[in-house]
Image (tube, rainbow, N blue to C red; front, side):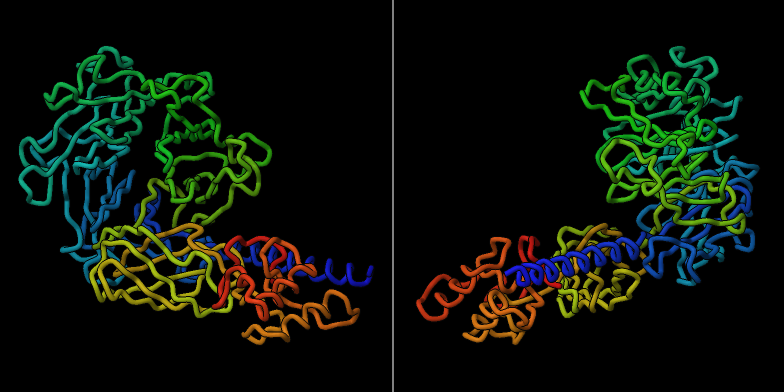
Length: 534
């Protein structure tokens, strides 16, 4: 009896160890979405791709120049912000160029180098107000672009929109001073906009770099500008209490909360209007990352970019790096060593001073609605169905899971099909590449064992032999092991015992209830509970 118990525990333990190894493997091979990154020291843009699926961008060929001074377009002076649309990349340059530029890779060579791939949307030759030190921009749902100009001679936020449909914003009336200190005495006399962030319904958050306050701004009376205490009111005023001196960047995450960072203080705060009163109280502020913490890898966060799944990308010029931070243990911060991972360590070569991080633009607007099945066979062969929209029927599609390129097809403009290869057991991220645009879906699927409930001998059928094998394994020392104990758990109650053999015999010869799923066809354990398959 003790020998039988030891054997059972050994098999169960081995299955658990292998399952844990599979989980660790999937974590090591998690993919990351493609990115565009601007550098203000090298004055160029870099395209980062996680080609090998290891979650980083430092492999061979994973970093390439997308735009620099060898392009036919204007030479950059100090790029300060990036923003991807559905078909082009918007670049804000805040040095001597002082311009908003649109870039697109029309010929597919990975470089925006020809004249037809570069357009000046707005600069100081336009009829609107001049740019002096444009530092931040954000785009609203109605395609308006808000630009913060932190020059001490400007101290304003511009609003740009293409009213005549000619593709730029340099005609009269297309660029206006939307917010300025001169007409809003409630703002600090030293008001210096350092970051802007659109949050929907015509609302824009404007950070004041001189006071570490954030104002909620909205044109309520429809006169085209923000003026008065009702249209520009304090939203966050607790910067000093949280040791924030200035606000270098703002970013909104998927749950609606806002991240702000202070490079000099080395902190990232998380703001969430929990009570919905339209302001951030002291209890609605938490320190998400503290560079002074002994376990923190990030020291001086300058730029932020939120990813699907809850992780935050951080541009860190002091270390020539980009980090990913995520609250894994649920304590409200990401200060632990395992919660901050470098995804790009540059060494001063390409990105010594990260000035902007963005997704990659593309000709499509991909929207994924459903991925089935979410439990796929670790041995391969599962047909994956991806439902959504934003691609044409017959589009060129490729999937990447754990760094493995997988050919897929799009028979409909709402469906993508692919047959999966063998995968390491555990959770996997999914990258979908369609005609130059990629969609990143974290934890999209899990590779698990497929089995047939009742097939204890692995013959791919269920008969009297399976009941004999189960009874021998239960009561005869030295009998052959059952490698998938889930298959022997006929009633799926989480354990293998005599009642499972009786269940099987009852079904085979006495018209009893059929085995639990997966049956009569192989598949995954719906509950993913014990005892598992080794």
